[in-house]
Structure formats: C-alpha cells, structure tokens
Length: 130
Image (cartoon, rainbow, N blue to C red; front, side, top):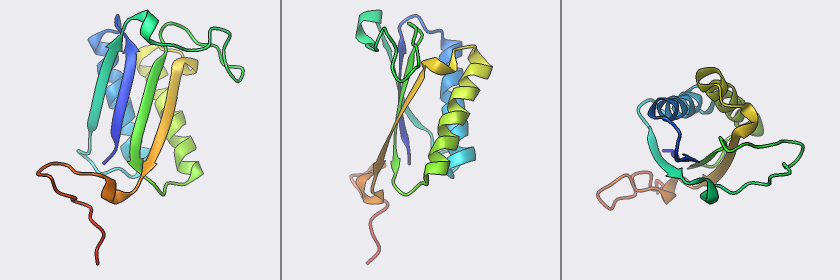
C-alpha cells in the first residue's frame, strides 16, 4: 500500500532510476513488511533550479546536485526501529547500486490510516471491519 514519490535531477539515467526504484521497493518488503507486488511509485525528473536544498548543508550533512528526494506515504504503525532500518536500507542500497552518495538520499515518511487508500473502482479496499 505504500506510494513512493521519487524526485531526481533531469539528467539522471534510466539505469540509475531503475536501481533507485528497486532499492526502495526491496527496502519496503525486507524492512517494513510490505506485501510482495505492492509497488506503486511516481518518478519525476526536475531541472536543477527545481530541486532546492540548503547549499550550506543541514544538520551536518552536505548535498550535491545529485540529491534524490524520496517521499513515502504508507500505513501508520511502524516502529521507530523499522523506520530507521528502512532509511538505512535505502541509503546504503542506492549507494551500493548506483554510487550516489548516501548523504544525497533524502527521505520523508507520511503515515496514514488504512482507510485512506483506494486502489481503484472508487472503493475503500481496507475499510474498517464493523
């Protein structure tokens, strides 16, 4: 049920994008108990003036023009330990598969209720059981 939004520089290659996509999905399945085949992602490429980050860095982390913004909307209820493992799996996985710096992997999570999803047909597939 997660939805991942991935924002990258316009010159990011198809190969790197495919690797980023797979790493995020693999991390969801391996660390966050997301069901197999539950892969919904939106990828956007942006010109350099559309990816804004602090040039002086933030919290001791410096960024480059290769920054990758990842925002995942998923069901609430995962522990802090699961979230930490998820962040680490993504940053290390992307670094290992693409060479992109771990510092340039920026991740945000949005927790929602199960009933906040419709997977089609105008239905609430995860409606609360009464």
